[in-house]
Length: 362
Ligand code: ADP
Ligand code: MG
Image (tube, rainbow, N blue to C red; front, side, top):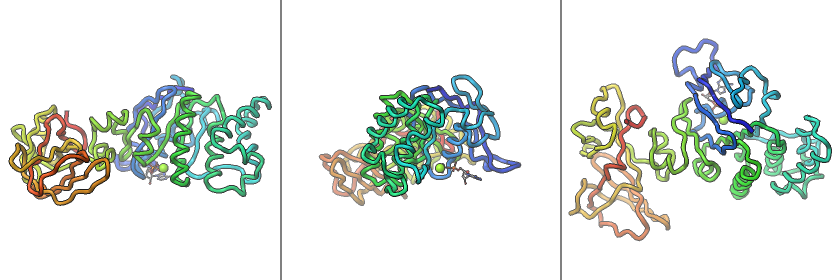
């Protein structure tokens, strides 16, 4: 396994890119640690596949270098990079048996026969493919085929990293959950560097030690699920991670107060100063996670609001409130007594963040 460095990578699919909008990847400078389990999370079209293909060598970036353990592999083709890649849809040989499909990547590399046998049985066992080993791949279900694809990615023990590009898209939801756990198990057992692309935050949270969040061709934040929840560095992280996502309101800031939705919300944290100095061209937003928004009795300290809906999730309640000229959501404990309708909303200052053009002001 290897550490992978992406050194000032940028990529445009256009022959003569003009501005930043012509780049699928704008500027990526990051390190993937040896043995790490990463989820690469971002909406469709943000550049996830482009980045994986650059790491594996299927695509040559317009700018920058890729290093494996400090060695520049930028000019090496995929087969020289020692990477396994699993794609969104099954890639296998229909006319071969499951066993032959799994053995293929090893046979190709002239691994001794008994070692191939051992490894194929091991991987088949993990993926519950043992009963199917002698069946032809052609007759199997879509789920089974994708499991074979996963197996083909996992079977080699000498790879620098395994890249998964939304591999569970075609898989049935229940099996999806099982396979995710399997991948986690495999990661623990074999200490692989895994990069797992997904647009599903729940999938990213359950699978990875670290989540790399991508948005419009940039890495906006890398962190543990907890870090992303507690300290979102970008509004995208704020509303994409967490359920419901962060409340975000456009505002102006002056004198330590954010004016949003016609209300004055005290903001004392770092970055307040920068938000006060923001130019009219910049978009300034104030954000708070629903979990930290405190819904209080009408005579308590806070800003006036009105409860317009309460959704009971069993473990918590999601309260929708009219607040100034907008609506916000609060997530409160199941057993919390709520005011009838009129209430106060309290924004704990340390949990109330200010963003400038999407980025946390600091
Ligand atoms: P993701 O995997 O996150 O959905 P992609 O990496 O596939 O995103 O795409 C990033 C951007 O690059 C998108 O705007 C997409 O339309 C564009 N793109 C992807 N592949 C190509 C290609 N082969 N030629 C031209 N544009 C492409
Ligand atoms: Mg993709």
